[in-house]
Image (tube, rainbow, N blue to C red; front, side):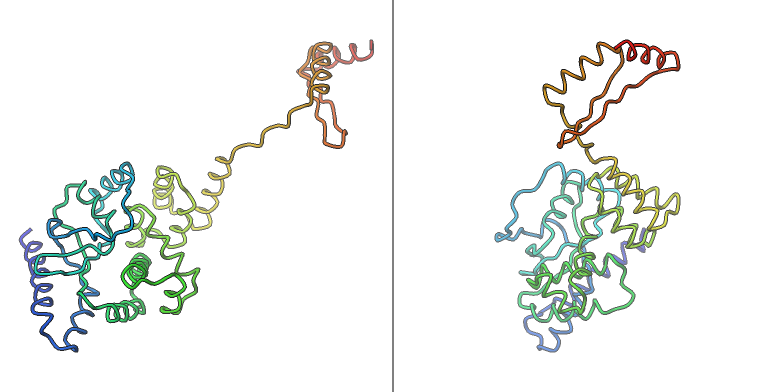
Length: 298
């Protein structure tokens, strides 16, 4: 416990040292600080963070927030928020308001955050693009960096694909991973599942079933193909069955009449061109002979 406290305190001191008198430092030193902050996650008290007044999103689903808060209690906040430093112990939220609200609901007093300086737009973009070229990043780290470029540098998916030299579809596939619940993101980050598994899980909208299949992947060591098959069968079973075409009034009368005369559940099927068939079910050989006798009498 003492080691954890010391480690946390050291991180705080390191970040504070980076931010000390930043305005008075040379341009070269500021570039160095921005590069360092790009990779550094600091724990910031929620009381020191103010919401951006220009945040376009104002409505948050209370049920979804409560669900996320419960997940955060178990797995923690995997994707840090991003804040802009206004002054000492004063920050403004850039991205992650939903995560910040859920953290408050979960009872957190501080959250992990990336810190940006006031005028570091070009430097932060260069540092993030440089970071994405590393080979040791896992899929979630790549996705988070892509999302930061979009949020902090006002890039579209097309702009982003040009900056990082990836196809737009590749960028979009990584970004979709951030829609997964925190525990599944954690599983992907820890390599309990692969990106192929994660992409397959995105094909399920039902939260409970998503978790159920995620657990099955780990417990049963399902391959990506097996996972895709499982999800395909699940989605096919959920599709509403096509309604049987209704018979016209005249045909319905014919079917009812045959059922009454034969004492069987006769089914009359008629196509649009007038062709069709009559199906007469029977339950046994004796029942078949009964039906044949009735048909011969007519």
